[in-house]
Length: 275
Ligand code: PLP
Image 1: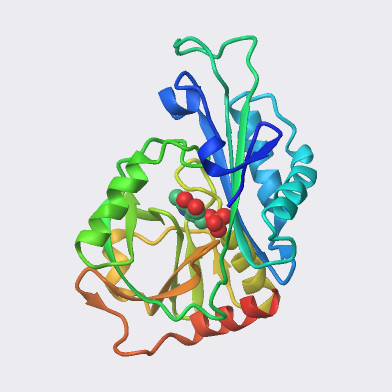
Image 2 (image 1 turned 120 degrees about the vertical axis):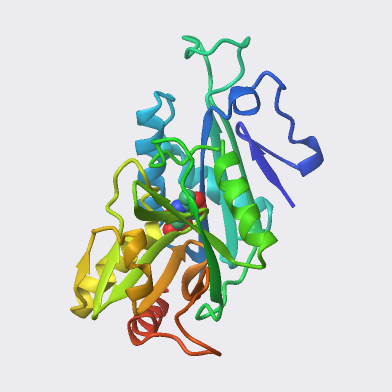
């Protein structure tokens, strides 16, 4: 196990950050998660672009283009070059005496680690999910480390022996606690548009591209709470979840046993071929 911290690659117990780091004090930082499959990070460019766009939104002065070299160094030291693994990247604003506004002279704290992880070929999870009001803030497009809302909402799913909590705001479904959510109705795929109420998942973007290339109609239109009992299929997307069929939403059973819908299955198979 190795951790990258501000240019150094050290053992986890030697990876130290100040208690005055704004990531610790305010959750003032961003993160990314990507997976290496068959020796290559899946959609690395899109992940790093999203990270850069988040950094720009919150004025953290860091160039994500510096990361690929550093990632290669980390993987080499961790003996994970070319191995299937998951990489976590976190960039916080840095260390400064506590004050809310952005300090002028501050150097970001960059931390990364990689762990071996082999993703299943096709996600066999048949997820049961609960629905809850999305009580998070209104800048869910920023992939910030302050995930307390997501953590609380995911914990509720665990308490109900469910895989995820799908969230609604203003009467429509937005996303889930750590995934995006899609619905299928009369052969058309629906998902919430990429505005400030959702994180624009890389897997979400890939699934939309797949729908377009497979000739499956896709609408970035949200499904409303009252429509939920009329949908034919639903699935979750995310970097480690990949594409997971949803079997049951609260008391509404979509399938029984190991069945899954034809659109979900087609997308899962097409997704597999991208890797
Ligand atoms: N939505 C939220 C709230 C998330 O935390 C995540 C992933 O962490 C996603 C969606 C899925 O994003 P991606 O496909 O880039 O992993």
